[in-house]
Amino acid sequence: MFNLSLPLRLQLSLIIVIGTALLKYHAWSNLIGYGAITLIWTWSLQVPIPKLGRLLGSELIFLSLVALPLGWERASFLLLRSVICLITMNSFLLTLPPHSFGIALKGLPIPTGLKENLILAGQYLEILLSEVAQMQRSAQLRGLNGTGGWLRYASTSIIGALYLRTLDRAERVYTAMLTRGYNGKLPLDSALNPKERFILITVGVVGTCITVSSYL
Image (cartoon, rainbow, N blue to C red; front, side, top):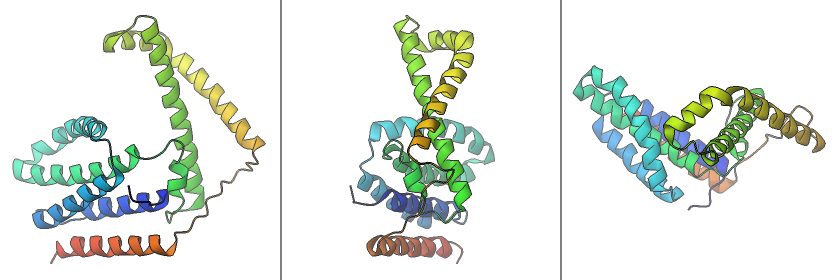
């Protein structure tokens, strides 16, 4: 894996996704260019292919239902464009270390307040998912195996218990943040080094040229 910082990896992923999304319809050669960049990006991050395939498969089911009524020719372009965007962002997310989403957000040119809200929302979402995983494990230990067993368990007890457990754990996390000096603001200042800025500018220029050329 290339030694790239998390903020740079997020920014590069967004350049690929935004550039692909802005391509002119039916610009197949430009789309293939972004596809090649995405494959290089996925290879450089050393993404676990089985996990990427499972995640992409579930996403494509929904996309197919939305795109196919538009006609085969239009749907094929939209689906391929969506696949490139999904592979790019899924590759970033699947290689993101735990509790590091806030670090990745540091370099984005968005308001500080929005960054803080996104970081806190991501933190509490991780807490919620962790509690769900623990309750699924508890259900399995009680003999409720399979999707049907888990759904029966969820329908009878999970909602209230999950809310209470998540709220309790969130309060403990907040208390731990206060003891570590949290004063309502998060340290969000981050700057790329010269090498990373060069990489970002280079990829940005290449992406801009590919996207703009689709309209020429």
